[in-house]
Image 1 (cartoon, rainbow, N blue to C red):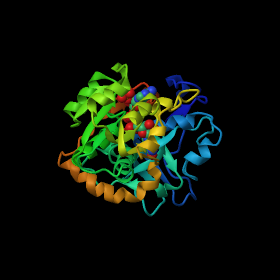
Image 2 (spheres, rainbow, N blue to C red; image 1 turned 45 degrees about the vertical axis):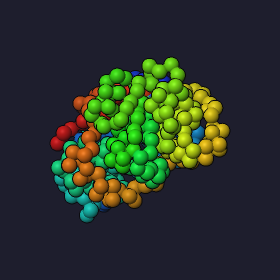
Image 3 (cartoon, helix red, strand yellow; image 1 turned 180 degrees about the vertical axis):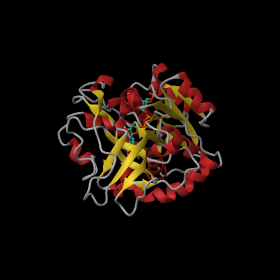
Image 4 (tube, rainbow, N blue to C red; image 1 turned 90 degrees about the vertical axis):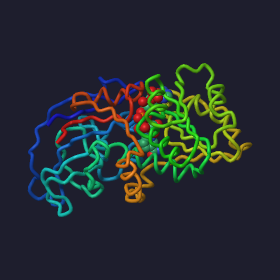
Amino acid sequence: NNQVVLKHYVTGFPKESDLFLKTATVELKIPHGCNGAVLVKNMYLSCDPYLINHMKKVEGNYADSFTPGSVSFFPLKLQPIVGYGVSRVVDSSNPNFKKGDLIWGITSWEEYTFIKFPGTFCKIQDTEVPLSYYTGILGMPGMTAYAGFYEVCSPRKGETVFISAASGAIGQLVGQFAKLMGCYVVGSAGSKDKVDLLKNKLGFDNAFNYKEEQDLNAALKRYFPDGIDIYFENVGGKMLDAVLLNMRLHGRIAMCGMISQSNLDQPEGVHNLFYLITKRIRMEGFVVNDYYHHYPKFLDIVLPLIKEGKITYIEDIAESLESAPGALIGLFSGRNVGKQVVAVARE
Ligand code: NDP
């Protein structure tokens, strides 16, 4: 059973060599007396920026961040990385899961995982869409986009929407939700290819490469001469400061993530917060975990949109467990184009 393991706590910018592959021996059946457990074969693993937080030794980080009971062992060295994935049940002593069931939820970065308490897993009912989608558009990132846009941003038809890291797992979906609602949508991304994707494949009204802009404030003024109603924040730092200068009265900012700050020793300061007051802006942080009760409704809305071709989803699939460290670390240099997935086994 090959596993991806944290070598040591990450300091500074993460490197592929912070992780390594190791082989562990596992018995491919449930041990006697483990009633309620399942053994799964992992098929697709989700590379998510939040995993980096759990690879750093930060006081108070782990207990708060992980779901109690399921992954609390994570900080111990020589345990595989733990994250979202799509898996197939290969043995079960749990009446709710049978051999062959497809599930998504928190698993480990290894070929086979023994799960003592599978209660938090979602059973995959619809297999007409690619199974990897349950790590992205139909999994945690999809729910994040949905909750962040519809619940936090309070969008209205005709509003102007700006999204950073717009071609990523979450951003690409927020932009498409906003277009479906009749908003004017602009995204920023870190390469020409990503900008082209946003404009030509994902239906954004416009997009720009933030790495080529000397002055982010001027760039935003170019695309939003009358200001921004909604900002979906994925990156933080200088972009947030520039956005604050360009928000409209009663604008809303959904604080989803601040990836530009995640590997800095000292986070950059935000200088323009005063505009929250003068422009009466609502800026709200949110965590997807608080919104999973919307998941059935979310599936009812999003599955038909996918099947009718009204929503597109771009994935970047790395083949094999060996490629997982590079795929994960690549998120922090923008190597991924779309949702970064690792295919461990396709069936
Ligand atoms: P993405 O698929 O968008 O991948 C990360 C992208 O971030 C990269 O491709 C890169 O795109 C961009 N990026 C990396 N480093 C920087 C940097 N220094 N400055 C600006 N952009 C950078 O990731 P997700 O869609 O999965 O996540 C997006 C955000 O949402 C993250 O901040 C994440 O932490 C957050 N999140 C929040 C959740 C919540 O519940 N609140 C849940 C899940 C995620 P580019 O080439 O365009 O720079």
